[in-house]
Image 1 (cartoon, rainbow, N blue to C red):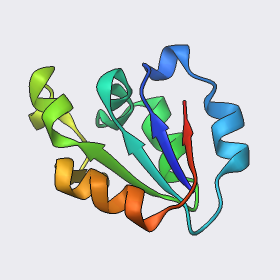
Image 2 (image 1 turned 180 degrees about the vertical axis):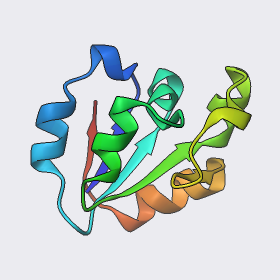
Image 3 (image 1 turned 135 degrees about the horizontal axis):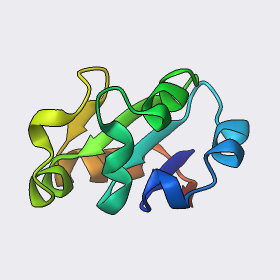
Length: 95
């Protein structure tokens, strides 16, 4: 399943998201959800402790001026990568 986190981690239900994540899942941070990719953030530590692969949409990072502040443990993707993730996963859950 592809989990897309579109809201700031402060306004998201990370506990429920983490309960639903399985090893084959991907988490994509976009819109204000990119704040969860900030180096040293509590939300990032929790997401990285899950079994899922965590990615972040580059365009949303750039739009918010955060490109240089994200963790190297998060995989940046462009819109083509976003499409590839949606093709990979038949199911998607928006957060």
